[in-house]
Image (tube, rainbow, N blue to C red):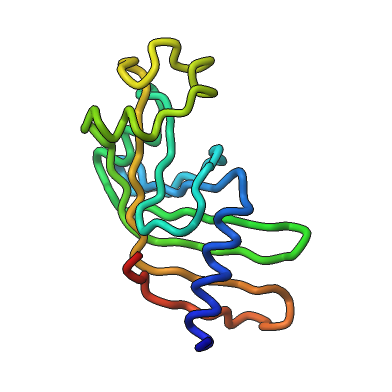
Length: 147
């Protein structure tokens, strides 16, 4: 297995192992914002999906600027993955239904048709993978791959 293939496999593993991520957006006047979010992605798909409320700042930010970043961190291993890309609000009712989990009903009782429920689609463009202290300050960066 090539080194790039091993890095890609490890990127997917880190994303799958993390139950939270940090979503970074840019607000309407260009200031960066970061916030923790629940994450249930398996790391294999090119598009990562997140759920949030329509009333959040992140939705307003993404409508103004689609550029975003996601950071996944495993503290016990001191490994992280940073994914850069674009993030958009999904309006397609079929996708909203497909990616709605029953555990989300505590936030959106009407399910995927709830007007406050927002599905975000993050399309990864590039990654930085930091495998731990052994690499120092020069972690590998690779372009996104087709899944």
